[in-house]
Image (cartoon, rainbow, N blue to C red):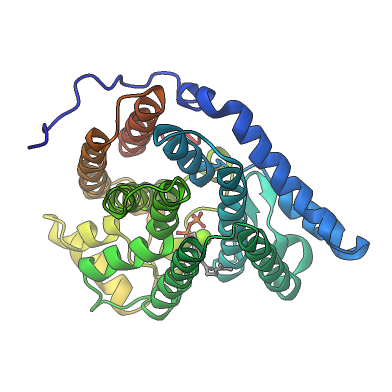
Length: 344
Ligand code: FPP
Ligand code: MG
């Protein structure tokens, strides 16, 4: 029988503290990503260097390294895996920014803003291909099969999302399934893949897969709240694109079910008629803040569930750091629904 709460996991105050444990390995992952551009001929290398030098939050590599450290130690394969996962994520963002017509990401102009959609799509493909090259250097067939399935899920989630824009018939369950695929798959892959490369039992691999899935869904809910609330300059990326494009996210579902019937009808009609939301005005309403709070609460529950998986791992500083990562996400959600979000 598993205990229901985790009183001994410390609550994180300094949000980068939990990453200190893997500081050196994270540096190696960054260096590995940066060095990938050298595989290309000079003209292409220029573009690839630009893409590979972007400073992301490195959440997925962080999960790989902490899970590896919590399950027996970080091996060379984990460094390559962390780099390949981040590159795959970067490739998906290059494409996503084309789809979302976003001009800023990680405080820099996006590839589509710099070089146009055509070249951006090709560069995203090139980055994806290079991530696959790195993957083949990890000579584990089961691992590579899992990686391929995760990549397929990521793409399928994105296709489903693009075909359900402005779809008033879409359900919350469908929303959850889309974000599981487009975001949580790579979080789940980070944790389960790290355990696989460690040679852990299948049961433990699946528990960690579940923890990654819960955290990934929770993170996407945070991101969806941020998009509606957003102040681009603070987030370092273009926000408000979900609402403009008709992406139905959790706060939008809550708005369509608001106790305030006028707001509920306004948002419902905006979706049905594809007329777009008056975000400026909605942000001034009580219903908007209630929708963000209710969304954040769902994500906080997922984090609580994710923490329960950690009891299955032996006690270690890395297990503590994984718990702290989940508390950090709690804080981000709380700050977001209080309207003082921060970009970490
Ligand atoms: C960000 O979502 C985007 C994703 C989570 C996945 C995007 C995936 C693709 C475009 C499929 C192509 C995949 C590959 C492998 C090349 P968001 O728009 O909600 O978040 P944002 O606010 O960070 O843009
Ligand atoms: Mg986007």
